Amino acid sequence: MNVGGAIEAVGPADWTARLSAAFAVRAGENDATLTHPFHPYPARLHPEVARALVNWTGERVPVPVILDPFCGSGTVLVEATAAGAHAVGTDLSPVAVELARIKTLRTTVATRRTIVDRAQRIAREAGERARATRSDPPVLRGEERWYERHVLAELAWLRALIAHEAPGSVQSALRMLLSSIVVKVSRQRSDSDVRTIAKPVPAGSTVRLYARKALELTRGLAALAETMPDDTPAAEVRLDDATQLETMNDDAIDAIITSPPYANTYDYVSHHERRYRWLDMDAEALRSNELGAARSFAVPEAGRLRFEHDVFALVRTFARVLHVGGTAFVVTADGALADGRRIDMVELFVRASRDAGLPLVARVSQTRETFDRPSHRAFSRHPKREHLFAFRRS
Image (cartoon, rainbow, N blue to C red; front, side):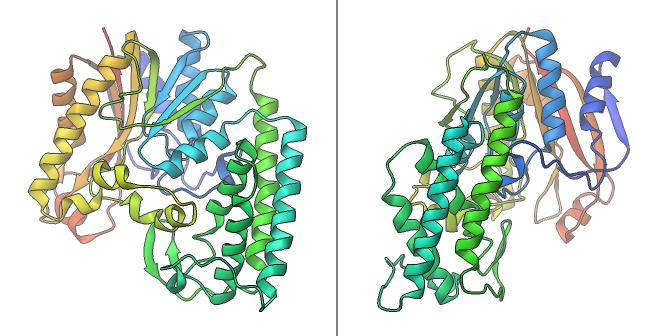
Protein backbone atom coordinates (compact mmCIF):
# COMPACT_ATOMS: atom_id res chain seq x y z
CA MET A 1 0.00 0.00 0.00
CA ASN A 2 1.06 3.60 -0.61
CA VAL A 3 1.03 6.06 2.28
CA GLY A 4 0.06 9.67 2.92
CA GLY A 5 -2.93 11.90 2.28
CA ALA A 6 -6.05 13.09 4.09
CA ILE A 7 -8.25 10.42 5.72
CA GLU A 8 -12.04 10.31 5.38
CA ALA A 9 -13.80 8.20 8.02
CA VAL A 10 -17.36 6.87 7.65
CA GLY A 11 -19.13 4.84 10.33
CA PRO A 12 -19.32 4.56 14.13
CA ALA A 13 -16.61 6.54 15.89
CA ASP A 14 -15.18 3.56 17.77
CA TRP A 15 -14.77 1.61 14.55
CA THR A 16 -13.35 4.45 12.47
CA ALA A 17 -10.88 5.35 15.22
CA ARG A 18 -9.44 1.82 15.17
CA LEU A 19 -9.46 1.64 11.38
CA SER A 20 -7.76 5.03 11.09
CA ALA A 21 -5.07 3.98 13.57
CA ALA A 22 -4.46 0.77 11.59
CA PHE A 23 -4.24 2.73 8.34
CA ALA A 24 -1.87 5.41 9.64
CA VAL A 25 1.43 3.96 8.41
CA ARG A 26 4.06 6.69 8.14
CA ALA A 27 5.61 7.45 4.75
CA GLY A 28 8.80 5.47 4.18
CA GLU A 29 8.20 3.22 7.16
CA ASN A 30 9.54 -0.29 6.75
CA ASP A 31 8.98 -3.38 8.85
CA ALA A 32 11.86 -5.83 8.90
CA THR A 33 10.65 -8.02 11.73
CA LEU A 34 9.97 -11.77 11.88
CA THR A 35 10.06 -13.48 8.45
CA HIS A 36 8.59 -10.50 6.54
CA PRO A 37 11.77 -9.30 4.75
CA PHE A 38 13.08 -12.70 3.66
CA HIS A 39 11.47 -12.91 0.20
CA PRO A 40 10.53 -10.04 -2.15
CA TYR A 41 6.88 -9.86 -3.15
CA PRO A 42 5.23 -6.96 -5.01
CA ALA A 43 2.47 -4.88 -3.38
CA ARG A 44 2.46 -6.54 0.02
CA LEU A 45 0.12 -5.29 2.73
CA HIS A 46 2.19 -3.39 5.28
CA PRO A 47 2.86 -5.62 8.32
CA GLU A 48 1.84 -2.85 10.73
CA VAL A 49 -1.62 -2.67 9.15
CA ALA A 50 -1.98 -6.44 9.40
CA ARG A 51 -0.69 -6.42 12.99
CA ALA A 52 -3.16 -3.77 14.13
CA LEU A 53 -6.12 -5.65 12.65
CA VAL A 54 -4.92 -9.01 14.03
CA ASN A 55 -4.53 -7.52 17.50
CA TRP A 56 -7.96 -5.90 17.34
CA THR A 57 -9.50 -9.25 16.40
CA GLY A 58 -7.66 -10.95 19.27
CA GLU A 59 -9.17 -8.52 21.76
CA ARG A 60 -12.64 -9.77 20.85
CA VAL A 61 -12.04 -13.49 20.29
CA PRO A 62 -9.53 -15.74 22.12
CA VAL A 63 -7.39 -17.67 19.61
CA PRO A 64 -9.34 -16.37 16.61
CA VAL A 65 -9.38 -18.13 13.25
CA ILE A 66 -8.07 -15.48 10.85
CA LEU A 67 -8.26 -15.95 7.08
CA ASP A 68 -6.38 -14.15 4.34
CA PRO A 69 -7.82 -15.45 1.03
CA PHE A 70 -5.19 -13.49 -0.95
CA CYS A 71 -2.34 -14.47 1.34
CA GLY A 72 0.50 -13.70 -1.07
CA SER A 73 3.81 -13.92 0.76
CA GLY A 74 2.02 -14.44 4.07
CA THR A 75 2.11 -11.03 5.77
CA VAL A 76 -1.24 -11.44 7.55
CA LEU A 77 -0.52 -15.08 8.37
CA VAL A 78 2.86 -14.26 9.93
CA GLU A 79 1.28 -11.57 12.12
CA ALA A 80 -1.62 -13.85 13.07
CA THR A 81 0.74 -16.68 13.97
CA ALA A 82 2.97 -14.36 15.99
CA ALA A 83 -0.12 -13.26 17.95
CA GLY A 84 -1.18 -16.86 18.70
CA ALA A 85 -4.13 -16.91 16.32
CA HIS A 86 -5.09 -19.78 14.02
CA ALA A 87 -3.91 -18.47 10.65
CA VAL A 88 -5.52 -19.75 7.46
CA GLY A 89 -4.42 -18.58 4.03
CA THR A 90 -5.35 -19.28 0.44
CA ASP A 91 -3.96 -18.07 -2.86
CA LEU A 92 -4.06 -19.08 -6.52
CA SER A 93 -0.29 -18.71 -6.84
CA PRO A 94 1.68 -21.86 -5.97
CA VAL A 95 4.68 -19.66 -5.10
CA ALA A 96 2.56 -17.77 -2.57
CA VAL A 97 1.26 -20.97 -0.98
CA GLU A 98 4.69 -22.59 -0.54
CA LEU A 99 6.29 -19.32 0.59
CA ALA A 100 3.58 -18.54 3.16
CA ARG A 101 3.90 -22.05 4.58
CA ILE A 102 7.62 -21.58 5.13
CA LYS A 103 7.29 -18.06 6.57
CA THR A 104 4.77 -19.26 9.19
CA LEU A 105 6.57 -22.50 10.08
CA ARG A 106 7.27 -23.21 13.74
CA THR A 107 10.88 -24.40 13.85
CA THR A 108 13.37 -25.70 16.38
CA VAL A 109 17.01 -24.68 16.70
CA ALA A 110 17.95 -28.03 15.13
CA THR A 111 15.69 -27.49 12.10
CA ARG A 112 17.05 -23.99 11.53
CA ARG A 113 20.62 -25.26 11.79
CA THR A 114 19.80 -27.97 9.25
CA ILE A 115 18.41 -25.39 6.80
CA VAL A 116 21.58 -23.28 7.08
CA ASP A 117 23.97 -26.25 6.86
CA ARG A 118 22.28 -27.75 3.80
CA ALA A 119 21.94 -24.39 2.07
CA GLN A 120 25.63 -23.66 2.58
CA ARG A 121 26.64 -27.12 1.40
CA ILE A 122 24.44 -26.80 -1.70
CA ALA A 123 25.82 -23.31 -2.42
CA ARG A 124 29.41 -24.57 -2.13
CA GLU A 125 28.83 -27.55 -4.40
CA ALA A 126 26.83 -25.53 -6.94
CA GLY A 127 29.62 -22.98 -7.14
CA GLU A 128 32.25 -25.68 -7.64
CA ARG A 129 30.26 -27.40 -10.37
CA ALA A 130 29.50 -24.11 -12.14
CA ARG A 131 33.23 -23.30 -12.23
CA ALA A 132 34.10 -26.73 -13.64
CA THR A 133 33.77 -26.22 -17.41
CA ARG A 134 33.65 -29.98 -17.97
CA SER A 135 30.50 -30.20 -15.83
CA ASP A 136 27.47 -28.87 -17.70
CA PRO A 137 24.45 -27.92 -15.56
CA PRO A 138 21.00 -29.34 -16.22
CA VAL A 139 19.46 -27.08 -18.85
CA LEU A 140 16.30 -25.09 -18.16
CA ARG A 141 15.34 -24.14 -21.69
CA GLY A 142 14.01 -20.67 -22.34
CA GLU A 143 15.83 -18.99 -19.45
CA GLU A 144 19.02 -18.16 -21.35
CA ARG A 145 17.88 -14.65 -22.28
CA TRP A 146 17.26 -13.75 -18.65
CA TYR A 147 20.70 -14.54 -17.21
CA GLU A 148 24.38 -14.22 -17.81
CA ARG A 149 25.90 -17.60 -18.62
CA HIS A 150 27.70 -18.08 -15.29
CA VAL A 151 24.58 -17.02 -13.35
CA LEU A 152 22.48 -19.50 -15.29
CA ALA A 153 24.97 -22.26 -14.44
CA GLU A 154 24.98 -21.43 -10.74
CA LEU A 155 21.17 -21.32 -10.57
CA ALA A 156 20.87 -24.56 -12.53
CA TRP A 157 23.17 -26.41 -10.14
CA LEU A 158 21.39 -24.97 -7.11
CA ARG A 159 18.10 -26.20 -8.54
CA ALA A 160 19.46 -29.67 -9.32
CA LEU A 161 21.02 -30.14 -5.89
CA ILE A 162 17.90 -28.94 -4.06
CA ALA A 163 15.87 -31.51 -6.01
CA HIS A 164 17.99 -34.29 -4.49
CA GLU A 165 17.06 -33.29 -0.94
CA ALA A 166 14.39 -35.34 0.83
CA PRO A 167 10.89 -33.83 0.45
CA GLY A 168 9.66 -31.95 3.50
CA SER A 169 9.86 -28.59 5.19
CA VAL A 170 13.65 -28.33 4.90
CA GLN A 171 13.59 -28.96 1.16
CA SER A 172 10.72 -26.49 0.82
CA ALA A 173 12.78 -23.87 2.67
CA LEU A 174 15.68 -24.55 0.30
CA ARG A 175 13.33 -24.08 -2.66
CA MET A 176 12.10 -20.76 -1.29
CA LEU A 177 15.69 -19.62 -0.86
CA LEU A 178 16.11 -20.21 -4.59
CA SER A 179 12.82 -18.41 -5.26
CA SER A 180 14.04 -15.39 -3.29
CA ILE A 181 17.02 -14.79 -5.62
CA VAL A 182 16.01 -15.84 -9.15
CA VAL A 183 14.64 -12.41 -10.08
CA LYS A 184 17.33 -10.43 -8.26
CA VAL A 185 20.16 -12.04 -10.27
CA SER A 186 18.23 -12.00 -13.56
CA ARG A 187 17.93 -9.35 -16.26
CA GLN A 188 14.33 -8.72 -15.17
CA ARG A 189 14.18 -5.08 -14.08
CA SER A 190 12.43 -5.79 -10.77
CA ASP A 191 9.85 -8.04 -9.13
CA SER A 192 7.06 -5.84 -10.50
CA ASP A 193 8.61 -4.86 -13.85
CA VAL A 194 9.27 -7.61 -16.39
CA ARG A 195 11.29 -5.49 -18.80
CA THR A 196 14.93 -6.52 -19.24
CA ILE A 197 17.95 -4.44 -18.24
CA ALA A 198 21.69 -4.98 -18.03
CA LYS A 199 22.41 -6.23 -14.53
CA PRO A 200 26.05 -7.25 -13.97
CA VAL A 201 26.28 -10.19 -11.55
CA PRO A 202 29.85 -11.32 -10.75
CA ALA A 203 30.68 -15.01 -10.92
CA GLY A 204 30.07 -16.73 -7.60
CA SER A 205 27.78 -14.02 -6.20
CA THR A 206 24.60 -16.01 -6.97
CA VAL A 207 25.57 -18.96 -4.79
CA ARG A 208 26.89 -16.63 -2.07
CA LEU A 209 23.58 -14.76 -2.08
CA TYR A 210 21.74 -18.08 -1.76
CA ALA A 211 23.78 -18.98 1.34
CA ARG A 212 23.25 -15.53 2.91
CA LYS A 213 19.50 -15.80 2.36
CA ALA A 214 19.49 -18.97 4.47
CA LEU A 215 20.84 -16.97 7.41
CA GLU A 216 18.21 -14.27 6.84
CA LEU A 217 15.38 -16.82 6.71
CA THR A 218 16.46 -18.69 9.83
CA ARG A 219 16.91 -15.46 11.81
CA GLY A 220 13.31 -14.60 10.92
CA LEU A 221 12.08 -18.09 11.79
CA ALA A 222 13.89 -17.89 15.13
CA ALA A 223 12.21 -14.55 15.90
CA LEU A 224 8.83 -16.00 14.95
CA ALA A 225 9.35 -19.09 17.13
CA GLU A 226 10.29 -16.88 20.07
CA THR A 227 7.28 -14.59 19.55
CA MET A 228 4.42 -17.05 19.02
CA PRO A 229 2.75 -18.53 22.11
CA ASP A 230 3.45 -22.20 22.77
CA ASP A 231 -0.12 -23.28 22.01
CA THR A 232 -0.38 -21.43 18.68
CA PRO A 233 -2.15 -23.63 16.09
CA ALA A 234 -0.13 -24.46 12.99
CA ALA A 235 -0.94 -22.15 10.09
CA GLU A 236 -2.90 -23.70 7.21
CA VAL A 237 -2.15 -22.52 3.67
CA ARG A 238 -4.00 -23.88 0.64
CA LEU A 239 -4.27 -23.35 -3.09
CA ASP A 240 -7.78 -21.98 -3.60
CA ASP A 241 -9.73 -19.29 -5.46
CA ALA A 242 -10.81 -16.50 -3.08
CA THR A 243 -14.05 -15.98 -5.00
CA GLN A 244 -15.07 -19.60 -4.27
CA LEU A 245 -13.06 -20.92 -1.29
CA GLU A 246 -13.98 -24.50 -2.05
CA THR A 247 -11.61 -25.74 0.67
CA MET A 248 -13.36 -23.67 3.35
CA ASN A 249 -16.41 -24.66 5.41
CA ASP A 250 -19.33 -22.33 6.06
CA ASP A 251 -19.26 -20.29 9.30
CA ALA A 252 -15.64 -21.26 9.94
CA ILE A 253 -13.85 -17.91 10.25
CA ASP A 254 -13.74 -15.25 12.98
CA ALA A 255 -12.06 -12.57 10.86
CA ILE A 256 -10.88 -12.01 7.30
CA ILE A 257 -7.93 -9.66 6.88
CA THR A 258 -6.91 -9.24 3.27
CA SER A 259 -5.83 -6.98 0.45
CA PRO A 260 -7.06 -8.25 -2.94
CA PRO A 261 -5.11 -7.30 -6.08
CA TYR A 262 -5.92 -3.76 -7.14
CA ALA A 263 -7.81 -3.44 -10.43
CA ASN A 264 -5.72 -3.06 -13.60
CA THR A 265 -2.47 -2.62 -11.71
CA TYR A 266 -0.36 -5.79 -11.75
CA ASP A 267 -0.02 -9.16 -13.46
CA TYR A 268 1.28 -11.40 -10.70
CA VAL A 269 1.55 -14.36 -13.04
CA SER A 270 4.04 -12.37 -15.15
CA HIS A 271 5.98 -11.05 -12.17
CA HIS A 272 6.64 -14.56 -10.88
CA GLU A 273 7.22 -16.27 -14.22
CA ARG A 274 10.91 -16.86 -13.41
CA ARG A 275 9.94 -18.50 -10.13
CA TYR A 276 7.31 -20.76 -11.69
CA ARG A 277 9.87 -22.03 -14.18
CA TRP A 278 12.75 -22.56 -11.75
CA LEU A 279 10.49 -24.24 -9.19
CA ASP A 280 8.63 -26.32 -11.79
CA MET A 281 5.24 -24.97 -10.72
CA ASP A 282 1.95 -24.93 -12.60
CA ALA A 283 0.50 -21.41 -12.55
CA GLU A 284 -2.44 -22.09 -14.87
CA ALA A 285 -5.06 -21.50 -12.17
CA LEU A 286 -3.64 -18.05 -11.49
CA ARG A 287 -3.23 -17.34 -15.20
CA SER A 288 -6.92 -18.08 -15.79
CA ASN A 289 -8.50 -16.60 -12.66
CA GLU A 290 -6.26 -13.86 -11.27
CA LEU A 291 -8.54 -11.16 -9.89
CA GLY A 292 -8.01 -7.66 -11.28
CA ALA A 293 -5.05 -8.62 -13.50
CA ALA A 294 -3.98 -5.82 -15.84
CA ARG A 295 -4.06 -8.20 -18.81
CA SER A 296 -7.80 -8.74 -18.27
CA PHE A 297 -8.41 -5.01 -18.93
CA ALA A 298 -7.04 -5.05 -22.50
CA VAL A 299 -10.66 -4.35 -23.50
CA PRO A 300 -11.57 -1.87 -20.73
CA GLU A 301 -15.31 -2.54 -20.51
CA ALA A 302 -14.88 -6.31 -20.56
CA GLY A 303 -12.26 -6.02 -17.83
CA ARG A 304 -14.49 -3.80 -15.72
CA LEU A 305 -17.42 -6.21 -15.97
CA ARG A 306 -15.29 -9.22 -15.10
CA PHE A 307 -13.76 -7.39 -12.13
CA GLU A 308 -17.18 -6.36 -10.84
CA HIS A 309 -18.43 -9.94 -11.17
CA ASP A 310 -15.42 -11.24 -9.22
CA VAL A 311 -15.82 -8.67 -6.43
CA PHE A 312 -19.48 -9.62 -5.99
CA ALA A 313 -18.50 -13.31 -5.84
CA LEU A 314 -15.74 -12.49 -3.36
CA VAL A 315 -18.03 -10.69 -0.91
CA ARG A 316 -20.64 -13.47 -1.13
CA THR A 317 -17.91 -15.93 -0.22
CA PHE A 318 -16.86 -13.77 2.73
CA ALA A 319 -20.45 -13.83 3.98
CA ARG A 320 -20.54 -17.62 3.67
CA VAL A 321 -17.35 -18.45 5.57
CA LEU A 322 -17.61 -15.88 8.38
CA HIS A 323 -19.17 -16.70 11.74
CA VAL A 324 -22.14 -14.59 12.80
CA GLY A 325 -20.48 -11.51 14.27
CA GLY A 326 -17.33 -12.15 12.23
CA THR A 327 -15.58 -9.25 10.51
CA ALA A 328 -13.95 -8.88 7.11
CA PHE A 329 -11.27 -6.19 6.84
CA VAL A 330 -10.39 -5.35 3.23
CA VAL A 331 -7.64 -3.02 2.00
CA THR A 332 -8.13 -1.92 -1.60
CA ALA A 333 -7.81 1.12 -3.85
CA ASP A 334 -9.67 2.84 -6.68
CA GLY A 335 -8.65 1.83 -10.18
CA ALA A 336 -8.30 3.43 -13.60
CA LEU A 337 -9.13 2.10 -17.06
CA ALA A 338 -7.11 2.82 -20.18
CA ASP A 339 -10.01 4.88 -21.55
CA GLY A 340 -9.84 7.28 -18.59
CA ARG A 341 -12.75 5.91 -16.56
CA ARG A 342 -12.31 5.23 -12.86
CA ILE A 343 -13.31 2.24 -10.76
CA ASP A 344 -14.78 3.60 -7.52
CA MET A 345 -14.20 0.84 -4.98
CA VAL A 346 -16.49 2.37 -2.35
CA GLU A 347 -19.41 2.30 -4.76
CA LEU A 348 -18.53 -1.22 -5.94
CA PHE A 349 -18.09 -2.72 -2.47
CA VAL A 350 -21.25 -1.06 -1.15
CA ARG A 351 -23.26 -2.73 -3.92
CA ALA A 352 -21.48 -6.04 -3.39
CA SER A 353 -22.08 -5.97 0.36
CA ARG A 354 -25.80 -5.35 -0.13
CA ASP A 355 -25.99 -8.19 -2.63
CA ALA A 356 -24.24 -10.57 -0.19
CA GLY A 357 -26.08 -9.43 2.93
CA LEU A 358 -22.75 -8.54 4.55
CA PRO A 359 -23.17 -5.02 5.94
CA LEU A 360 -20.41 -2.45 5.59
CA VAL A 361 -19.95 -1.20 9.16
CA ALA A 362 -17.23 1.38 8.61
CA ARG A 363 -14.50 2.52 6.28
CA VAL A 364 -11.56 4.88 6.18
CA SER A 365 -10.31 6.26 2.87
CA GLN A 366 -7.06 8.10 2.19
CA THR A 367 -6.10 10.09 -0.91
CA ARG A 368 -3.29 8.77 -3.07
CA GLU A 369 -1.07 10.19 -5.78
CA THR A 370 -1.46 9.15 -9.41
CA PHE A 371 1.56 8.24 -11.53
CA ASP A 372 0.37 7.30 -15.03
CA ARG A 373 -1.64 8.99 -17.76
CA PRO A 374 -4.85 6.89 -17.46
CA SER A 375 -4.92 7.55 -13.71
CA HIS A 376 -4.37 11.28 -14.23
CA ARG A 377 -7.39 11.30 -16.53
CA ALA A 378 -9.56 9.07 -14.37
CA PHE A 379 -8.93 11.06 -11.20
CA SER A 380 -8.86 14.58 -12.59
CA ARG A 381 -12.14 15.43 -10.79
CA HIS A 382 -12.22 12.88 -7.98
CA PRO A 383 -9.05 12.01 -6.04
CA LYS A 384 -7.76 8.48 -6.13
CA ARG A 385 -8.17 6.81 -2.74
CA GLU A 386 -7.02 3.75 -0.88
CA HIS A 387 -9.57 2.23 1.47
CA LEU A 388 -9.83 0.04 4.54
CA PHE A 389 -13.32 -1.48 4.78
CA ALA A 390 -14.87 -3.34 7.73
CA PHE A 391 -17.81 -5.64 6.96
CA ARG A 392 -19.58 -7.59 9.70
CA ARG A 393 -21.81 -10.62 9.38
CA SER A 394 -25.03 -10.07 11.32
